Structures are given as C-alpha cells and as structure tokens.
Image 1: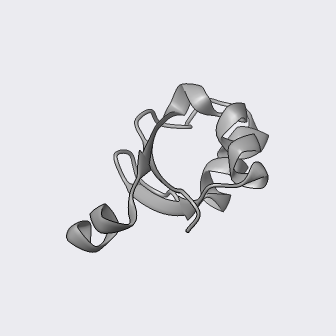
Image 2 (image 1 turned 90 degrees about the vertical axis):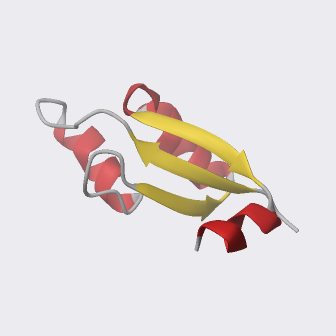
Image 3 (image 1 turned 90 degrees about the horizontal axis):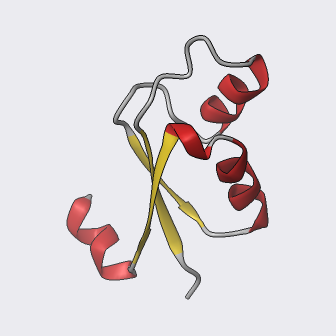
Length: 69
C-alpha cells in the first residue's frame, strides 16, 4: 500500500501570505497542533514544500493509523 503522512501544523499562518494560509486550509488544518493524515503523493508533497516552515511531517505505517483513531 501507499505511504501515508501525518501532517501537523506547528506554527500559526497568521501574518503569512494569503497563498500559504490557503494551502494550510486545503490540507485540512484549522488549528495549531492539529494533525491530519494524507496519502503521500506529488500534490501533497508540493503543498508541504511550500509551507514546510509551518509544519511537522511524519511518515506513518498502516498499523499506526488504526492505533491513533
């Protein structure tokens, strides 16, 4: 199966460009220290690269997904 990524917002997007705030929202992040899980792919990787200074990204295995939910 494909890799999954746990993406956590660790810094607030307040005061940053509108485009970066829009990327944060499109990833599904609304609050600081909120985490979401996405499939790893080029679109998600591109979003992460643009706002990497706001995020913490971890690769997770399929077993970890079921433990955290």
